[in-house]
Amino acid sequence: MAEDSSDWLFGQDNEHHEWLKKYGAALYIEDSSGVTVRDSRVWHGQNALCLDCVTASRVYDNDFSLNSGWGIALWRCSSNVISRNAVDFCVRSYSDGVYNRGQDSAGILAFEQNNGNVFAENSATHDGDGFFGFAGREALGEIGRHPVGWYTRRGNDDNLLVGNDFSYAAAHGIENTFSFGNQYLKNRLVGDAICGVWAGYSRQTLIAGNDLEDNGDMGYGLQLGGVNIDHGGDNLILHNSFVKNQCGVHLWGGDNPDFDKRNRAKANGYTSTGSVIAGNTFHGDTLAFQFRGPGQVVLGRNKFAGVGKVMLAEPAYRVIHDDQRIVEPLRVPACKVYGHTHPVGARSELRGRQNIIMTGWGPWDHAAPLVRLIKSVGGTALYQILKVPLKDLQVKITGDQVRALLTKVPGKPDESQVTVRALKTGVRPYVLDVQAAGKPLAEKKGTLLAAKWQATFFKWPADLDPRKNLEGYRKLAEGSTMVTAQLDELSLPYGMRGPGEMGISAKVAAAKLGRDHFGMIGRTRLPLTKGTWKFSTLSNDGVRVSVDGKPVIEDWTWHGPTRDSGQLVLRADKTVEIVVEHFQIDGYAFLEFSLEREADPAPAQEAGE
Image (cartoon, rainbow, N blue to C red; front, side, top):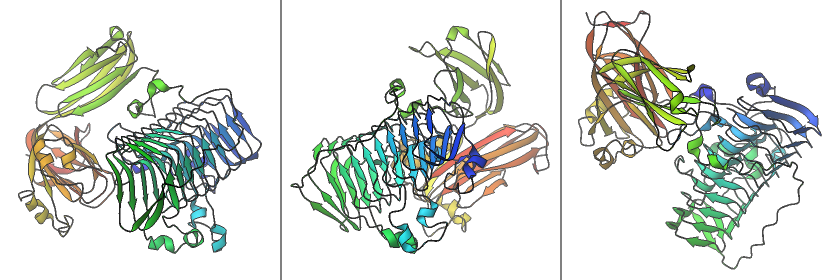
């Protein structure tokens, strides 16, 4: 699974009821006060509960899990108590170990100036973000015009997040940016893909008494680990337990000329100064502290055990050591917590992001029978069948030169596998029918592309732009940086990695091509039958596909994840040479190639006799 821009939820706009018009919800409440929402369940939808300009209300003892968008969403809401709700598995577009953007799904979402709310003892695990807060477009000065003073301390302010479980997020456990005076106390933040807490441009935040463990393994660039705050200041990070994070605390600052022009920046500033880190424990973290300047921080007494490295600090970031600094014991503000349920830990058997399993509509509920494709590599596809005993299963495969084998998974009585295999080289479409106890369970259509690709990977210098110098780019495939490998398929989900980190081969890893400015040219020969063929790519950045030297796809540009397709009509059976060229500039990268037979011929480029 990879990024598709049409799959993103855009919660930033709701001044004109965009949430209701574009997305909807099972429960939508607006312009209200003193509302109670309790003992409700919403599963298998997109958004469960949306609160639009709601104040002094209570939301508790609800189960708004297993939705593909937002569990609970707030817009301009204040003085509400959101407690003891289950909002687990509110997520979209996730593939474990491959893709983890979450498309702005969240267990709890709070956009545009939500102030003084209490979020207590909720379970918000396995979501896009556990808690996703954003000050809002008006608060940032993107819409509306106000005097400079109006923007002072304007955001998602003075909220209390206490005793929640924000673990196993596809992106962040807590993301709340451009905001003031929030308190994140005694929350569980374990196994979040990018970081436990992301508080960019936020100030006066108290992050205390939280358990932050094993965060950041799928972070992007320098965004990874326990607590990440860029351009934020006057924040207190106290009494937390950091265990096995990629980085415990990462703070950084620097100039932002475009932001400087906004009244928001003039009213509040954005220097990375005035923060204190004290009374924390670090155990087994790869790196405890990283500071990138300019900025300034006070380090009180912290404890370290088995840490890979205590600190990386740029000279421009001033680190003040103060072991004598007195850190007061953690005191949780008095607040009323409503509800009799205890959702935190109630789904402990599903801990871990590997249990985020997506279906065609959203997250799987781990209860209904499921047939899903695990992987399709070249001439082999592997399907997993869950929640059905092997004795009740029957499978049937339809297709030329393909076979299917049903096998048991040892030690798992309700899990089986089906291996679909091509018997000969070529493009092999198939239909897999799965029945349970004699009744249809699933029909899966696919295409095996049984081929051997000769792939050449290489580095290109910054002064050679492939978009302007295609021949120079191609010559690099014969140059000193090139390295070759044989692939069973052309599917390269780099993400933020380079070719050497994909496990392709020891030779490719040793070439050290890096994560940016690399290219790949892949070649194969395939026998194709007479008719119309559809070539498809998903790429980031540039891609070209040619058949026998003639282009069928050309998107040789710097672009985000983009799907392209092209057609080829053969008037006779023919073995053709297919060449796929790809370049990566920087950041996120992806390349996937597929080929299938079209049912009806259509006008297109012709080849063959």
